[in-house]
Picture (tube, rainbow, N blue to C red):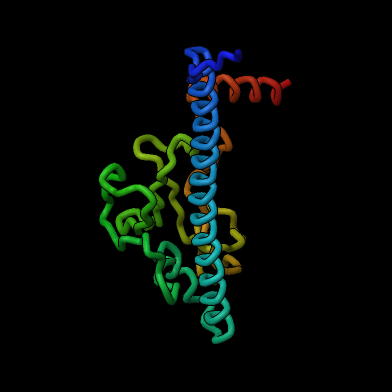
Length: 198
């Protein structure tokens, strides 16, 4: 006579802990990957807009040169480059008069009419490095590209040679592959500086 056990085995406590651990690890890896993709999407979007602005600026410079109006270029320095786009980005919120960057929503562009800066308010601040204090942002300005013939540091009509316009960042910035730890970044910078001095 065969005896059949009617017991049904469920998860043991150890098996349950193991399953929860595996799920937790997979979730963490997926979340990290999604965050990296989100940061890369923001970086790419910002660079695409900068590229479009530089292309539009080149067209404006070419128009002035071809029409013999090179002398108009100095007056275009410090202007809002968004005005040169046929269609402005959806996240461009217009002209502001020296606003507090903390009051600007993340992922938004605006033109600071007081300082003549085009500003991008960064969203993923943990992956963005800049010397600016306060809300993380990148600032850009339309500058006159010229040769300072008399080397006085200023543009002089009739003396200095005009080449065109440039859209430059006001201060250096960088997107990081890993979250920024200020203490770690400082120590790495000091080490790099010391190595460069040797």
